[in-house]
Length: 248
Length: 294
Image 1 (cartoon, rainbow over the protein chains, first blue to last red):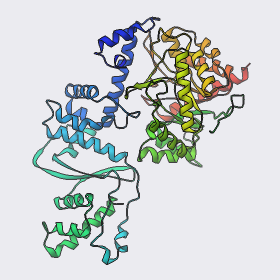
Image 2: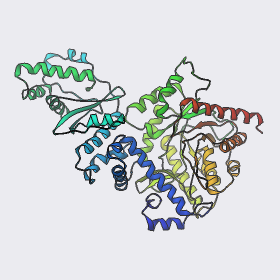
Image 3: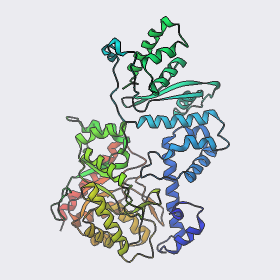
């Protein structure tokens, strides 16, 4: 099959030509070239659709070699193209000369996460009223579960602003700070959402992701808040997460 | 196993459909709502065809909209990844997922292509042709039987647009398809544009193709536009259907009788009204063909 898809598979291409009929106005090599072009074009379109702004950020001179190298290194092994682009965020770390650019790496990661969140399984989120139904004695051991597609990301660059600018066709004003800032990405009904969050909030969401209880969350908040303010902060965060539809 | 109908004149006829694409979700839903007033003179599609693989996902927008559409329109499931002609073992997981989707959608039928799409676990995501000979017939027919057993329903097999052919072929494409249908007891989705494209690319008479296909197994027609490069044609689904294809369709209707027909559009999407107007043109060709049918 490589002879039919890869433009540099010259030995196997000769063997393929030998078994093809010569008819009509095209020779065997021209006929093979139609399939080769279609293969690459189809996978390119998939990447363009999975990473709608990465190409604008990089420009054709960097984006095209990146995608070509990715297609060569990670040929599809699934009947569906839904996950074809899944390995690009890891692959981009190895691709000179862009592998050291925070904005490129983060934008790639962000775009794939948007896609994952968009396609995540639907689930009914808990409503804010849920908190009133929990008996006092159950609060310390209470654990939470995120709606499918929820993710926390840490970006050094102003990645989400850059993404928005590129989506609107504007020139992005790229800024990179030394310390990564936390962002959350999730889906509310059919709309994919993202927003920046505070450091204590990110810490609590990470604790929830690893199965920690409400009591553990309150203990963690002591790092940022005086003891008397911890219950108020914990409750405020919980209310907010429920109103955003983060928990199920 | 469910049956559509035995190979006979008693074929289901669903009228004239469109390929369901995200670009048209909103407009089609609004037009298909109960009591909706149509904003123009075009008719709604009678049915919709989905690309099965696009809905074999965990959730999100595709499945949300599919739930809405299946309440309003009959749905056909059309796949591109069954890989029925490959020498790789049949992908049982894929077929189980397809069956799960079918159980959810309750489609009028399931179709895929008479081709291979990959080998050695490498997927080409293209519809690749086979040598047309006895060995391929036996190979494909046996795999269709396996697939139909897993899906618990017969499938429709679609003819390809192809750009190359093999010295090992010992028969025409239409003889090949006819033999597979008979041996595997499956049906045919006869793509009229693909016949035209392949006829130009391989220099055969498209009428000979039409007349060479047995009538009974044909349950559906596809129509689409293509890109004509002079010495060859590429099946692109990105343009209106050209007149020679519509003429061929007219002859197909005269020969096969009423066959459920839909338009595939996969790029350069026009406003929905434009596509529906093209579908109305297809309806008019059908009506005219039935007046003069022999």
